[in-house]
Amino acid sequence: MELYLVRHGKTVWNAENRLQGRTDIELNEEGITAAKELGEKLKDIHFDMVFSSPLKRAFNTAKLICGNRDIEIIKDDRLKELSFGVYDGAYYKDWLAPDCPYRFFFDEPDKYFPPEKGESIEECCMRTKEFIQSTIEPLAQKNIERVMIVAHGALNASLCCYLENRDKKNFWGKGLQKNCEEIIYSFDGKKWTAVNQ
Image 1 (cartoon, rainbow, N blue to C red):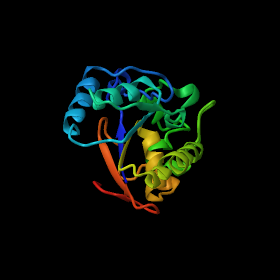
Image 2 (spheres, rainbow, N blue to C red):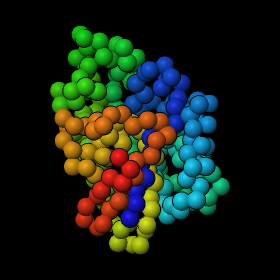
Image 3 (cartoon, rainbow, N blue to C red):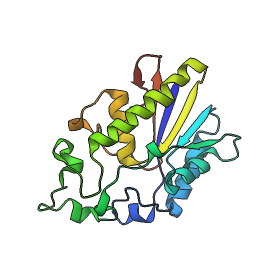
């Protein structure tokens, strides 16, 4: 079974270098265009199932990628972005300032702890692991050949941590996934393998 893992298209807050977290921000024109272009790139690839975060920027990306295909896009709350709590909407420059206690998020994630009302990296990894184990992996026994998940930067990083058996220190792997970039994995019923990294 193949799994395509896609990050949503760009939003106004992406362009403004702001943390989005659980805030439900729409795609901007660049994001809409990129999602349509990815849909065109993948138009000849058949997907048996598509899952999406319920947040608009991810769900609308999934819809644009799927285009006119007759396929249901299944929303799942476990695919919502990691919550930054009271820091949702903060600018990266403030988040990464030397005196900000949350500055380790991107560079030293093993030292990161969440802001008030936020979610830890461990909590995000636990829910994405549960999603893959309970929802995605059993599909391999049902003759499902190809699945797409459309979600978010940190959320997808946590999915990759499970798929690649990475720890918190290596949370970001090779870096933050680009908007409308697809990462492909294969699953043999026991082990996940990165196909295009």
